Length: 503
Image 1 (tube, rainbow, N blue to C red):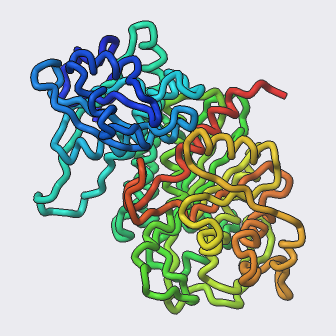
Image 2: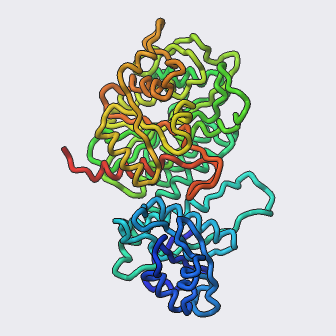
């Protein structure tokens, strides 16, 4: 899909359909919508009076122009109450509208800057939300479907139309929106792939392609190099798989320091059977997505490389399968992480924290000043927050606040969880420094307290995306399957950190 910015009048644009808007509770049409209405001899205002156009969120009304305008169709989308409008609601409304128009085999669309100058939404933010909504909301994953029937149409172009004096703001917003949305769709593609098409080796090859395409430095450690570094957590989990593990490091150098200003770490279990502590068979196929955190980190750094903030970013992706065989890790075993801490294995299905222990240790060894990790870590977080909110855990409130603000900007809901020292007592082991399961109570928190053992005093936030990495239905700009959370949060975070003045 091509995203374009055009200076001009929406009513004069050549397109299969144009999109204008209406707010709930308003009796009269405003601005561009009113101008289009006049050219349609009052057809839209008549529908408002009759109650057919109410302006409710995501309400879609199609009117044929019948030759009165260059575009054949006019769509009025409801944005809800003006006082409650947010960028995320614009994003969702555009996604729903584009998806609906695609079902009508519409291929070219033009829209006004939805929501601009309403409720403190800037012109640039509106353009970004439109680009993201259009690209995220029409995403499909059909790589392995061979039949042609029931294949959705394709929207080839979405144009954002505004006054000439606003063109530079619209272009900047649209460019950022396209970059972040396309990166999110990259993460979706990776997480939606079957596990036999997205092995640790496949992830490493994908990372190598990203490095070449976006000018990133790449290091891929193999099994022998992991042994030299003492990555006992990653090596322990990998023992049950015939697929060799990979430890992937991607570096973006936009700052002046030698060290990474921030390390983004993503769990990449390319298939999680639970190991010896094997999972139930129900919905086990979804465990191909247990590498969603790694996919998000890899995709986020491609967007960061294109946006070019003045900051150094390291992306770390420990990748392996978690499978049972005669050589697999067993409950009761003890592993030694890269930083020297010993870990008693209570459940082999609590494997994500083991590989993250080595990745966080690696980031610390390389001098990362801040760390954020993303992981489909615990079913407990999914129970606590459902598929709406990502759980956030950390040791530094300043960094936590930055992550929460970045998530709010992205429309990726994040909820801060407690990290009191008392929770860590549940992870105490009788035979090692720490055990990998702290019991049934507060499972998401004890998992985060486990990870905290490997960051020491480095500012760090852990994002548990077990609930939000996958959705089973369409909702706004989210499509059934992998969501790509938290790619856009991470990109926003890095940009905000780059813009902070030195302290």
